[in-house]
Image (cartoon, rainbow, N blue to C red):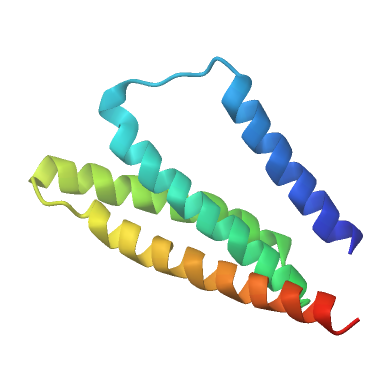
Length: 116
């Protein structure tokens, strides 16, 4: 339970730092950044789910976090250069998994709190 608390504290700290640090990027990169953030969030929710299922592996999380974000950004970039909206593939894949992981986490938490 302590690890789960640390994960949530890290997530909240990252969101707060991201909101208040004066880091900006050009609007021309907003498409790439949005799909990369979606992919990173998918990895975070996948890590929370795997931790709750007692299957968490740090190497898998870190490689997935950066690998998924880079792959999603690369797909968006290649699609932009080719004039084909390839970023839709990343949005669909990572968005679907993000909502599936969230649903599983939600159900697990509800089961834990209602069966005590």
